[in-house]
Image (cartoon, rainbow, N blue to C red; front, side, top):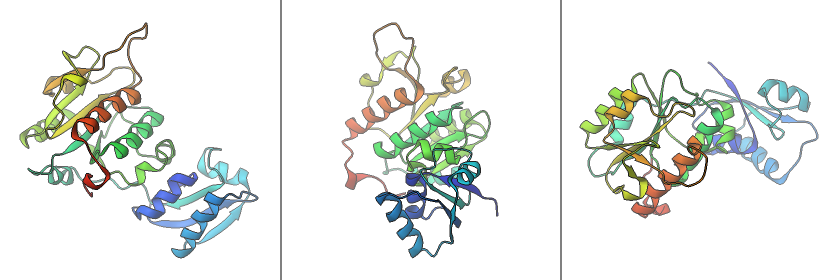
Length: 253
């Protein structure tokens, strides 16, 4: 079985709670203690996960990062859903809210967007297979563990994927600084997919062409555009605001 080292209190804790990954071992840095770590270790004990106390330097080498907060776990890779599952979530009556990320390559941006998406009621995140950041442990850390609860789908052709969604009656809105309307001028109560582009290039031309509308975030000042994760957050929370999503209204996927 392929495996990777998940690290950080939030990612490991949320992975334990979600049960979306198989745990092989838990690694605890020697002399690291905190109430949050104690709670996590208790949860791992109830799952009967083998535990090993190791030097912090060894855990840093295993994780490839010193931001492990004294905890790491050998786990199966982040599960990837099949796109057919996205289409199943898009049946009439369920009012889909999907996030499509086109050419986003920075793991920190991907993690931040996934964290916001989970909070804003997004049902699934769709990534291209190529030229895109992958759902790695670094992304889970950047998402504060939100990745462990968010369905992630990878597709070969984003433009074709958009066509399939539109065939299901889903409106596709692409974030673009040159969009002909703002996020505050759109009706986001419809079934929708929001497309956020890469850090440097934005949404690719062919993907733009297939969107129903290109939307912009109004701004002032000398900076040309917002960071991809910030722009995505603004748009997702406008959807959230318009839909009036409460905790008990979120779809259970």
